Image (cartoon, rainbow, N blue to C red):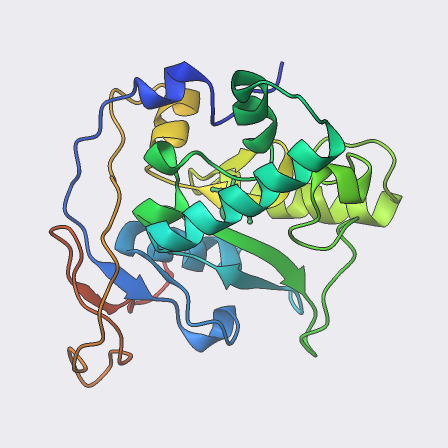
Length: 235
Ligand SMILES: C[C@@H](N)C(=O)N[C@H](C)C(=O)O
Ligand SMILES: [Zn+2]
């Protein structure tokens, strides 16, 4: 059965925040300048290096401030309520979490998640079956990673994405083929780790460039500095 982010076992996972900085992903991952925890950025680099020639990861979102998370929750919950008048709060909470995480356990708010896809050499998105962020209702359930009513090409591309990311220790959220995380509570529960590595990060604020190589981003959040990821991808 699908483990949802609203499952109480996710919130029960302790967080022992390792106080790791947020870093800006380099432009090779797309123009979004996504911020993620340093270790996640390093793992994404290894995953990128494992892809066949001519195929690249395109990250569309990483760290997400809490107020944005809240706004997505409210918007999607309103859509569900409109479809199902009279729905009770517990059921609404569960159904909402198929598409957006409850704030307390939100992996993007911890800088521990990315929404991403595959692109070709020209930057054109490969077929993964649905657009990123298609809800279960909009996609007729084809947003689920394991959906069987997608093309063979889309299936192969989802499997390729999963192969390179899971080998680097990331976990997929099964209701969204595009969402992978590392170090958050959902990751800890599904991998058997004793605790999550990352808790929520307060909204970063603009700050000077940290080093000549660093992108001009943002400054620390709850005990976190911000920098840029660097280094080779050899192991
Ligand atoms: C809203 C969607 N892009 C997303 O990020 N969903 C996951 C489950 C989340 O909110 O962490
Ligand atoms: Zn996501």
